[in-house]
Length: 410
Image 1 (cartoon, rainbow, N blue to C red):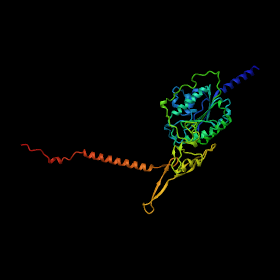
Image 2: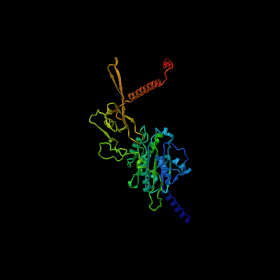
Image 3: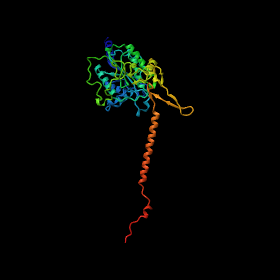
Image 4: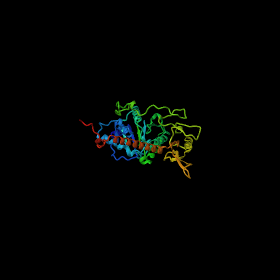
C-alpha cells in the first residue's frame, strides 16, 4: 500500500513538472543537418533561438556561450544566412511567430507534431508579463532593421496570405513587412479547434511551397503560477536600438477613401481601400500608390482605369491550396503607331509602358542611349584636349634655332 501511494505521488509530481514547461514547435522549409540536441532549454537559451530565427541575432550577444549552446542554437535557429546571401535573393524573408499563453493542453493546438521540423521545451517558463516584454523588445528590434530586399514580392504576399488565414481567429501584426506575429492569451477566449486547424493549414502551405516556403515558430506557454519563484531577468540581457538608430521615421498619413484609421500601421485593414487617388475621367492615369495584386478582375479594371488603356487586367497567379485569394494585375502592351513620311509603308513607332497600372512610359532605352552618347562625347572631348595639351608641351626642333645668332663682337 505504501509503495502504491508513493508511486502515485511521484507520478503526480512528474505530471505537474511536465505541465509547467513551455512548448516550442519550429518549422523550416530546408532540412537541418545538425544533430538534434536535448530538447529542454532555459529561457535565456530560448531567447537566443528566437533571435536567431527572427533575424535579430545582432542584438543578442553570445560571446560567453559554450560549444553545447552553439550546437543547440544551430539546431533550432533555422536557416543560416550564407556569405553575401547570393542564393537567398529569390527566397522569401517572411517569418511567422505564433505565441499563445495559458495553454493547458498542448495537443489541443498541435495535433500532429510530425509536420514540424523540430520541437523543444522551455524549463521554468517566465511569466506572462516577461513574455510580453520580450515580444515587445523583439518587435522594436525588428522595426529598427533596414528593409529586406524582395524583388519578387514574395515576403509581401506571404504576409498577406498569413493574415488572411489567421485573422479569422484573431488579428495579427506585421512588422517591417516580414515578421507576422500572432499573440493570444486566455483573455481572448480563443477557439482552440479553429486555431489548430489554421496552424495546420499554415504549415501545409509552407510545406507545399518547398524551398520557397517560410519558417514558422509556435510558442505555447503554460498558465503562470503565482507561487513560483522567478528571477528578475529570466530571459537575460540584450541590446535595444536607440531612437537615433531606428530605421523608420514619422511619415505623413496616406490618402485613403475611408475615414477610419487602419488597424495596422504597415498593412491596410482592407486592401481594397489602398491609398489611391481616383479621378472622374476613366481614361486618365491613376495617381497615388498602387497595388500589384487585386482580388478580382473588376477591382483591377476599376482601380487602374482598365490599365490606363495601355494593357489588360489578367490573372497573374492562382490562389494556393487553403487560400482563395487570386492575384489579378495589369499586363502592359506596347503601342504601335505608323508615322507618315518614313517611306511607302511609313515609319513604325513603338511606345512601351510600365508600372502597376501601365501609367508610366518606359524611357529606359532612350535614356541609356542618350547617356551613352553623352559619355562618349565627353570622353572624346577630354581626349582631344589632352592630346592638344601634350603636343603644346613638346620642345621645338634644334634646326629653327641654328639660323639665329647674336651680334658680332668687334
